[in-house]
Image 1 (cartoon, rainbow, N blue to C red):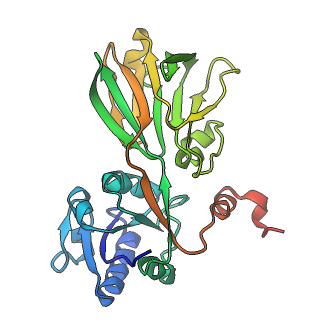
Image 2 (cartoon, rainbow, N blue to C red):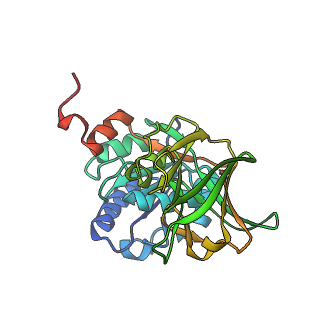
Image 3 (cartoon, rainbow, N blue to C red):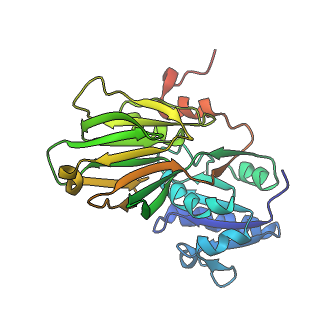
Length: 294
């Protein structure tokens, strides 16, 4: 790849370790003569707002060719959705906990510089779009990189709803809810619900029931090109909560439905040299008790 020249930096606000890493990163990039901009969420905290452009990611996205996110997976999910439509590659530096997406250590500035010099791999990750539809019109919508979750809210009772796939009835559910996840999200909430781990190279979506009443109601993997409809029974509408990546909430209408389709733009995730997906799984999920491969 060509070296990156116009770089924006964002991170988790209010975290001193994140701010310290960003300050070091700004110093390194300035020394290489690169154009560096800062997300307004962290601009003032870095002490560099007087010498570097500061703006929202929405306004910076058309003017940059790389976004560096310092924090955890949640920070990257939030930032990635803001730049996905502009196809800006995103590099994650891990200052969080688990770190499936932010896979560069803050101590490995050598890896960061190699990425900036173009020695990297860009991987496209599927993004979903959740739409609240009423009278055939979209009244609310939001993207989701990990998952769209429909779950019971303010009630101890199960909720009742139907799933339809490409216009065909699939199932009638009585459960605590449903997780519709991408391969990226298959190692997040869906994993704790018993869903399958899907390799990010698979163009698929998983429907994972949350505590279903019927034991035969199992996770279902379908094509990412499918049109998913969730029709909630009227008596359950007031007890239903819909969220995208646990960051954006959507409210259903009394006679409406929830549609989930593939978002028209993928998340372009940047990996440093030597990145291997199964190394990440072994490290994060403790496969093989930490022993090296045979």
